Image (cartoon, rainbow, N blue to C red; front, side, top):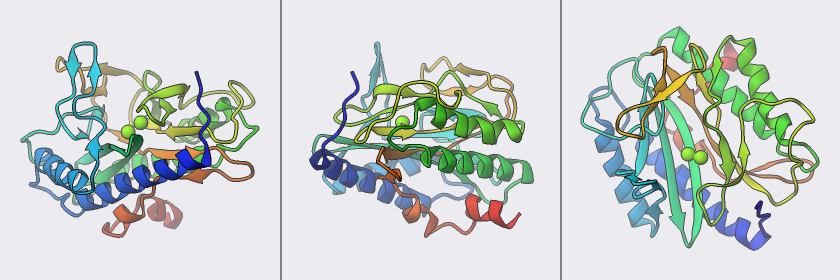
Length: 270
Ligand code: MG
Ligand code: MG
């Protein structure tokens, strides 16, 4: 069942999405070599609670498996769903921070991959391509287009760069549930798949590997990592399908206000 949202609902989701953006901005201030992902998680937990919301991830269940933390923090070859812990971030690491909240019954969900300290050219390229791919895909979230147009926008960018697109995990609808229909794959054929209708709210979230597309899940039941050990990047926006232009509910502006290096600007200058 695909739910199209009313303007009233979208207004509520705009507030949830904004809180996710602000939380990621707060976390971004603390990302540095030597800082643990567990510490970043505590920052997010306090911030979300102080703003009258709860984490969408803490307590999330798949079968009997319960996610134990506020954020998903995925370092280097971890793709998504990494569990925050006591290992300090190191110079040159990539860390994907995925944040979800529930505010007044509506979900927000967004992710950003940070480059810790000095970055390698190869990892910088990975982040740039993934970031650009998300933007291209967002531009396709227009009424009358199809899901395949969104997937193709990601695929076109990433195939051209020789990167591996994770196919086992996809974006999703969102609303009063974290994961609603439809699934939003990061691959597809233009003009194929479900037609996009105004008021559909989806999370578009390319997960792109520097190596091959294969992934596996750790024994913890959550952490998804690349099969070949190469690093992975992940950016996610919540988007309303509109006529003419997509409306992005989440924002990276709070993050990018505190960053010294922006993946997108780096690409433009290259
Ligand atoms: Mg997410
Ligand atoms: Mg998501």
